[in-house]
Image (cartoon, rainbow, N blue to C red; front, top):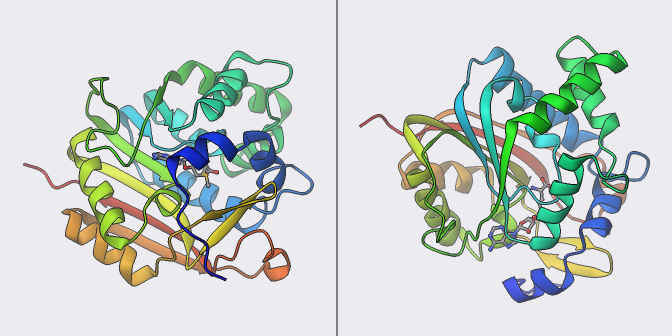
Length: 265
Ligand SMILES: C[S@@+](CC[C@H](N)C(=O)[O-])C[C@H]1O[C@@H](n2cnc3c(N)ncnc32)[C@H](O)[C@@H]1O
């Protein structure tokens, strides 16, 4: 059965960050804590720690209520601006940044990243959390469907923009996906970087009882969209999804990682 496109209004009314966290990132039951987190965290580690992608400012577009995507980046950038469309997600991010007692628990994920960095004792993990809290300077509203997604805020250009599992949720078709990528150009310095990681060939995902639309995009379509939007691809990696036992929750065929440059002037 085809999943109809999920409108912004439905996101506002029905995307529950707690259900999202429990379903996908809960340390015991989360369905994205295996293949996805291993793939995404390893790629971020390679890009930011050994790959030499660094700078002053990193923008995270469509952060959701999650922080896993920032744990490597906070070692390589002085400032991070996190952003998401939904107020309920931004509230969860702020809770974690403020160390609220009921903030989501990311300690197992922090440990995974510290292991990649070769230092996973509890002191190093605590230091990493504190480093990330200091590095995230703002949590802003963004809307991918607007020509200026941060309107009315005037954004500085970043050395790097990252986004995970977001554009497939927001874009109806490949044309819209390409347009959003093209719009991202204005937030990236000439010669700066963009890193996208997400699902391939996925047409829906559940949050609680609610089924959300996902744009089913292939590796070839992702590659063509980046080129058409004007980027130079540095690296494109895909892996198949093999944990098929949870296809009732989301039906991705695999995952992709793209690192690209905005061309220099
Ligand atoms: C599947 S979640 C991904 C969350 C997180 N990035 C992750 O890696 O788990 C999809 C995200 O798209 C965001 N979203 C929905 N509509 C949006 C829009 N119009 N512009 C930007 N983000 C939007 C939602 O708020 C949600 O955080």
